[in-house]
Length: 25
Image 1: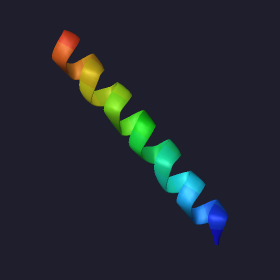
Image 2 (image 1 turned 180 degrees about the vertical axis):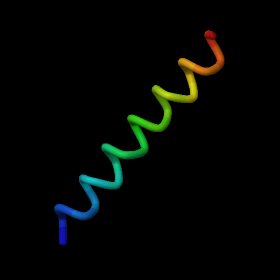
Image 3 (image 1 turned 90 degrees about the horizontal axis):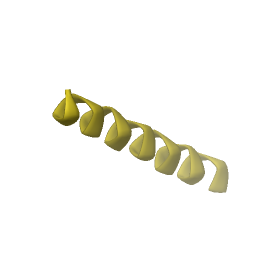
């Protein structure tokens, strides 16, 4: 079940990057 936790962290990281990009744009 550790995989699910890692995936969630990755998704959160990608989401943060997208939000940051929206703010910059």
